Image 1 (cartoon, rainbow, N blue to C red):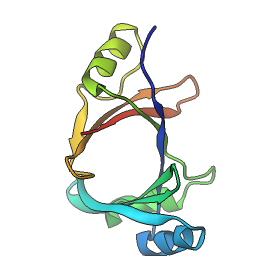
Image 2 (cartoon, rainbow, N blue to C red):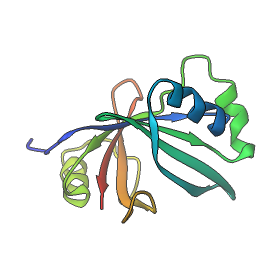
Image 3 (cartoon, rainbow, N blue to C red):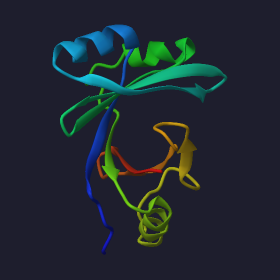
Amino acid sequence: MAVKINHIQHIGMPVTNLAASEAFYARLGFENVMASGFDSKGGRGSVAMMQRGPMIVELYQMPEAELAEIRSRKDGHIDHIAFDVDNVDATFTELKQAGFHVLQDDPIFLPFWKNGCKYFHIVGPDGERLEFNQIL
């Protein structure tokens, strides 16, 4: 298979207090390079992309109704690892045709960054979510 993966784009972590998490990562030398909101199950969430050099940590806070599950996690909070790709639609088609367990019906657009991004997830053998993401 010849899926072109450029590099790890970001590591996504759900947080229960975005402001506190932003301050924590800022103390480690990360800078907020993108902030946005998103809709989820009838509520509104918030996201901050925190960057230090080539590393990006995506911190996102789900709407209040979804925070109890995140607070109850006992095995860590890393939600996904995202790979940067040049053409998310072609990558989606290639992985789906190769029989990977793709979670979405189509790549999803989010109004992040300057022109948005598109992404989808596959599931690994232990349930880990791997994201393929193209910043548009």
